[in-house]
Image 1 (cartoon, each protein chain N blue to C red):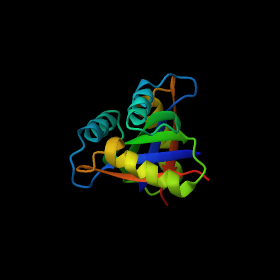
Image 2 (image 1 turned 180 degrees about the vertical axis):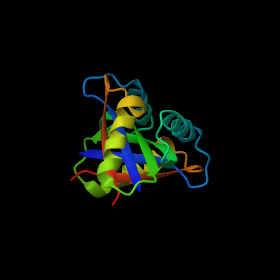
Image 3 (image 1 turned 90 degrees about the horizontal axis):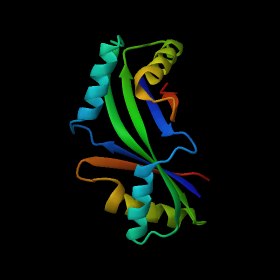
Length: 80
Length: 80
């Protein structure tokens, strides 16, 4: 079973990496950009057949390791 | 107009970051994981109204800055 976890900085949390990308793009002439935010994509392959159980496990993984829930949100997407 | 760019390592390219996450998850007791790959998510806000023109611009941005096309693939998703 394949799963995709996306970890984004919460709104309001400064994103220096996104800011740097934004400035670099403006430097290249793309001046119609008003904001850039950068996040993480984690793609996992699980030996799991029950999607409910897989989701519970993935949630725990996010809380414990994949995301810093003080400043980050995460979304879990399980491929059918 | 919002757009989402996902940058992934190409198949076959070593992913030490994903490998490290995999090992850390196994260390936490999640031993049903067979692979982890980590990628980048870049969310942009564009002052653009034409989706075709936006996509062309985003493709150029990916080729020039956002992705290293020697080792990475990218996908562009424009929110309607």
